[in-house]
Image (cartoon, rainbow, N blue to C red):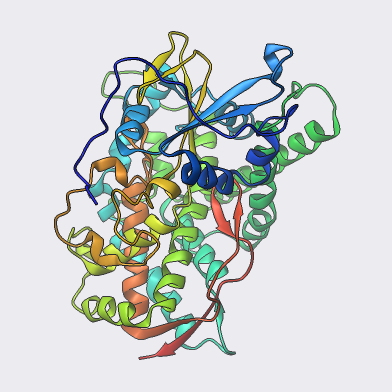
Length: 465
């Protein structure tokens, strides 16, 4: 294994290998039905660069496109950092914008840069650390429930979702009761529907404008209306309990969103922008964290010897130290994110000038995919890549930076990554201090939606220590 070697570049663009697929549909059905499985098979058969034809070999250009997957860290780095050649003007991000409005995830160009300047100070490592005690209190409450749970096991997926929502409710919306039961019920129903509809609309060969009253468009509009009603209910609840300007010890992100000012003197976020930001934070902020936590706990429960080594370090940890680079508890979370990154595939769109990547020429309009799920298992950079081994992340390593990218990369890396790591590490430490985890299922089926999530209950038995 050579983790430091970079890709040798050719002097002229090469043809891109890939599966032929169906004569009329190409790889459209395979990509839509099992995106990750298709990419894994492509990597196994064709290597680091794989082309997937979508649509017929011949016919109208609007029915034909090419999707190219890149799995080598050198290429992943360029996809994230060369924002002129690789834009976010993809079909998937366009569908997300239709659904969630204009926010830090869906905005582009100057619109995105303004929002990033306003929001970045709220999501630094230091800013996240201010919430450590509040998060620790929620983690202790989870431990108490797990420690005294009646019956043989907990559903870790539901428990972690409830934890993530309570943390969001207390940090984003300044509500000590967390997210209310009606909102939790609405989110349980909406999240899988949202994921399925985004995937379906983004992969349609013919995508009609939303103003056309087709059955799928009507369902999409109903889902969008339900999302907007949900965030409006949460914001109204927040307004009812708002006692005025936040005390320095009452740290709520919603007030900070409204109060944020651009250092370059531009206008603050409008109420519409605040709503759109709050909506994407509500959905993405709880699903990705809860899914990552569920996977980490399941893996620890499947590997008791590793769990005991990690747990031995948990008692010495403190909430404020959860960003230590050599913390085995934090390393277990990072390894969980390596094996089960919630954002398992990320897309970009080649700009109008076209470009070359990995010795391959890419025409304008080509869709490009990178997959943390696959690159995190690249045998050139990870020994025994399918093995759960948190000690990969303790101490120095010689892997290139983009061999590991669970939060994306470049300027548009996930703004909430420090919060997610802090929230996850605090919870895992708190659980391991009091409980020994036993996973009751060797494998957990996963649904490929916007993010990867368990398809059903994840059963874990918590034994008191």
